[in-house]
Length: 307
Image (cartoon, rainbow, N blue to C red; front, side, top):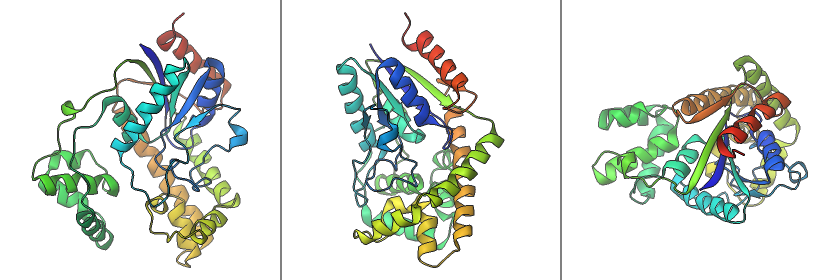
């Protein structure tokens, strides 16, 4: 079986730093698993590693989508499985890196067959949530309590999909037992877990650096290219705050503060998601810490690439 390495963890923990280091040590190539880094032009707010800092390591599934394109976890699973197979077929180590836990699960465990998107229904559900925040979670709780219990009330994208499936099929969400897991690979999942207070400080610093590095100019450029601001990537943390400031809805300081708060909340949800997977091996620090890098190498040598 081919080895496959996953590097996960909360935002701001240094996943890309660790993944690039491990790729240098083990002749690896990176496969992006950040749902927003798939989009072209959304660089600063997604903390996309600049080309000059990739140390010549090939990065796959970066900048592969236009902002107007719709992309699901199932779409990601198909693309990522193809990229992983191509890398492994050349004798390199595929290293999947990113914090979108649902995409990691879709890649490894597969997804059950689901009906196609109903854009009219989705638009109605999204409009309902915009008018009454929290209403989708309450509706799903009435229709399918078990599905609602697995979703955060602010996870609008997944709530919409769960309700869409329920309303279109009039059936509960299909069981994960109907999914086709990834086969032919020996998998090691590593996840960074720095101390909460240290991560909060790192997130605060990163939020300010994003705006200082030109996030507002990046958004201006995206709008000037013909985008409206209604595209899905603009709903993400950082971009929606920058857009709100450019539209005169909030001050710059409020935009930065909101970005920091929402990023901390998102990091908490990422940790919670990963803790639900017993296959994850935790590393108690940041990805740029040499001690953590050595610990990761020990895990790889012992569990993934035993000599």
